[in-house]
Image (cartoon, rainbow, N blue to C red; front, side, top):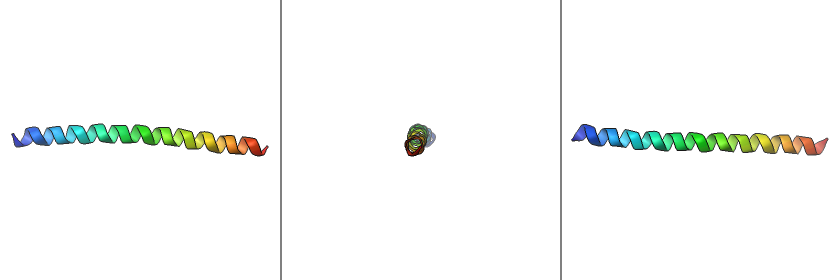
Length: 43
């Protein structure tokens, strides 16, 4: 019983971690795009 709860917790944490890393990747892409756009506008 205890191990089952532990497995469930780690699975939920893994899903949360995956979601967070995906959104961080998205944020990085947005930041890269904004930086590129700003430098392009300066030209």
